[in-house]
Amino acid sequence: MYDCKTTIPLIGLYADNELESLATSEVAEHLERCVQCRRELEVIQRQKRLLAEGVKSAQYNATALRTSIEAATVRAASFPFWSFHISRARTLKISAVVILLAFISLYFYQFIGNVRANSLYQAAARDHTLCSKASDATDWAQSDSAIEEKAKNFLEMEMSLPRRTASDYILVRARLCQLNGKNFLHLVYETPDGRIASLFICPNTNAVPAGDRSLNVDSNRIELTRVSDLTVNGTSKASCLFLTVAADQTVATALLLSATTA
Image 1 (cartoon, helix red, strand yellow):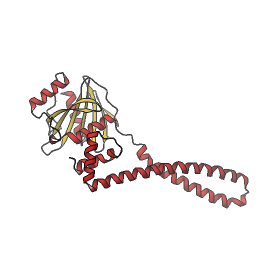
Image 2 (cartoon, one colour):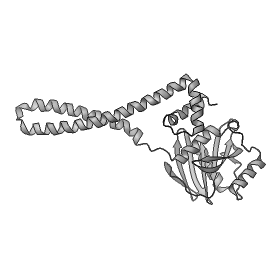
Image 3 (cartoon, helix red, strand yellow):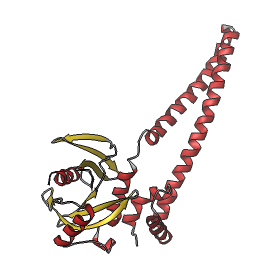
Image 4 (spheres, helix red, strand yellow):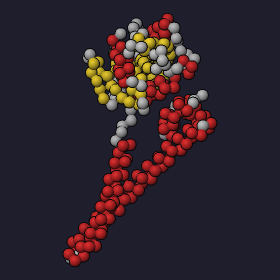
């Protein structure tokens, strides 16, 4: 059962119908109970309607602007200088429309110009947010021997998993999950004060989705991206795809390097 802290970051995805069925059901159930979160959803939906109306209005104004410019050009060529005051008034109107369109363009650019993170990175961030805590799933392996056994059976290879990273993050549990239809081993690292980082490993593939930027560290090419308030990094090694998720970029990068050099 979701609380407000879990639901609020997912409301935007819920409004866009981009959540998986289980998460959609949980968010919908919480919205029925919580007035505050329903108001948040209403704000987002109202913003979307305003944006849609703004785009429609901008398209209309662009057509009106083109017509006005053509008409003003014809009049400027036809009327003598004594009628300049009429052309000036028309010019002021056109200038006002141009300024309005400029502001609308700048407003929409922040939505159109921002490319959303690859869907696999979004899925990793979502699973980290929803399922990282032991209480959220019953299929966690939590002892060292159980974690090693689960990793060995899934990866079908001997792979040394980092037990500790970023000084105080310790491997505490593991489970199998699916991200975008692919099976991953999900490893969770936790600090004594409850901060969490996730490592996802998918065998038999080395395709790394492009991130917001790339980083080369010790011959490893790392793709870095942001999903909401989380850092998601990706790289490959030995035909395995590695993804890390953490609130702190330094922790996500350190965990990824520990996993690929262990």
